[in-house]
Every structure is written in C-alpha cells, then in structure tokens.
Length: 443
Image (cartoon, rainbow, N blue to C red; front, side, top):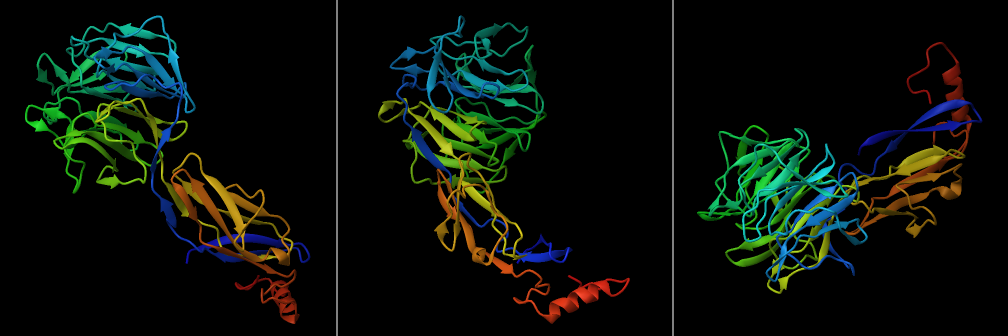
C-alpha cells in the first residue's frame, strides 16, 4: 500500500494534526483501449485517395489537399475543425495532383507541400498560411517526384523529405527544408530506395519515424528513424506486415506513433499498430475503418485525436472522416482517508489519454449529483459522510471504475482516533504540552 499524507485541523483544540492516509491504488489501475470513431459529416470533401494532410497548430484545423478520384486529379483545399469540413478558395493553389507530401512547420506556422503527379512529376514547393498558398522558389530543391513522405522536425526547425518515385526510379535521398532553401543530406546509413512509404515526427524522442513502402525489390516492412545526422534501422520483435501506402501520425498525448492500413501482397489492409520507440504493438479496436490504402492521417493537437480521411479500398474511392480516440488510463485513484468531524475532505484522481474524459463520483455505489470533476470536495464533513467513494471515468473508448476509497470520520477531540472522546485523548494533550521536548508520537 502506498502511503500519502493528508492534513486536518481541529479548531476545538487549536492543535494541527497530521493524519496518515493509505492509498488504495498504485500505478495504472485500469484502462480502455484506443478506438476508431467514424464522424458523420454532410459537408465532407469529395472522396479521394493520394491526398496529403497536416494539422495546422496555429489555426487549430486539419488541412487536406489534392488526391485523385475516378482519374480526375484534385486541387482543392479543405479544413477540418473537429465539427465540420470547410472548403477554402485561395487566390493561388498548387497544381491538382496525386500523392504530394505535406508537413506543418510549427516554427513559421505554415503547411509545407512538395511534389506530386498529374501526368507529369512535380517539383514545386508551396506553403499554406491559412489564407493562401504561396509558391517558393529556392535555389536548390529535390528532383520532381511523387509518393515521397515528409515530416517536420520541430527540434531542429526543418521539414524532412525522403524517397519517392521520379523519372522512372525510386529515390533514396534525404532532403531538409528550412523555409529558405532545400539541403540534401548525406547520412552514412540510409533506408533502401522506395516510394509510397509513410513518415511522422516523434516529438518525445526527437526522431522522424519511417515505415514501409515499395521499391525495386518489392514491399517493405522495415522501421527507420532519422535523428538529423543519420538513419537508424530499428529491429522490433514484431511489426506491421510489408505494405505500400499506409498512413501514420504521432499521438503526442499517448507518446506513440499510430499506423493504419495500406496495401500488401494479400490486398488492402485494415490493421492498427502503435510504435513506442522500442516495439510495435497491434491495437485491435472493436470498430475500425474498412481496409484501404493511400489515405492520410494527422494528429489534432487541440483535441488530442488522430484524424483520417480518404483512401482507396475494395469498394472504390473513400470519402469518410475517421478519428482515432486515445485510450484511457487511470494513473492514481482516490485515497483512503481519516479526518476529524468538521474538516474538509478532497478526493482526486489522475486519468490521461482521452481529450473528452468525463467523471461521475459515487457514494456507496450511488451517483453524487453534480460531482463530475476530477476531484470531489466534501466541506465540513459529518458522520453521515463516512462512506465508500469511487468514481466512474468515461471516454470514447469506454469507461473504467476506480478502486474504492473509504472515508472515516473521527469525532472532534478524538485525538487518538479510537472512535470516542475519553481521558486517553486528554492524556495525549498533556503529553504534548508537558515539556520542552515534544515526544515523536505526539499527535
């Protein structure tokens, strides 16, 4: 049992008391798994696949651009605010295209886009500031390509680009964009040449994570990380199967990279995986999107949710909006507590994971009206408040119940906490006031 210290003050004797409370919990108590939720929207963008996506932190919206449907290249810009989609009509725009790549530059507050395919390989560098697309004309830039991947390295302030397909071959180049120019990096180690892979930036560990894709030798199922100096291949004990055109996003709250779908030797895929920097773990939610590839995902920092849109599956081009709701973990539950009658009591819990956590405190199993916060304050407790308290914690993934905490009320002047007021309590006071050296067991 983990010990914690609570404080009570008995005004009738004007002596502070330090009452030990014993925790009913330690570490993770319970959890519910992350879950996919389809968001119904009447104003969604037209179905598409091969679109790019990034989350605009400054404006709190997810931005998508481009893609293809029924052979038509798309060049429209849309924003998702967590409630609905809004099409933007900027004065300028990148060419309609398939499989460009985008990443959000949080230092300069712009979405960076490069490349794509619309019958020709593209090599344009564009930036979206929330109102308009601006084409940049750096002196140095990567060769035209599509099916590459990009991620923004926030620690180093650069957008990282790797691979892609151009001029009939797959690339193995690493490029970085600082807002003024592209710089080709020449690391000692590098992933094999490929395209249609996926990348995201792990902000907790300061590395860009790369997975999958296809190259001259076929499909890939390898995991690589770029630290700004070199690429390092990771060798987890388990990993997603080989595939092209999956999508990934880094969940800042959970501290994991989430991967969904793609296309492998057996066809379209609908599996969800989480990478913690050491191992891949497959998540098997009760509800999940249908199998697909060439979709796009981004992490919504404001709502702490991963957003996914589009893709191509067995039923054709998809136009669905999905969100990956974080799981829920209860780190610390309420604590068993002794207090003196008339004192204030504060119970609390610590739960993390979901942006939409809801609480319902209970007394002896019955809900307490209005007790819907992470903490429960009971002012000036009386004997009627002595009970067992717990809290139901709800999130999109489900609900969990804390372990119970017992509240014990001692009568005023019950200094030895034996449940009654007698001469033993007076003896405790006399002992504390009878000399210059207060005994260590003095209340």
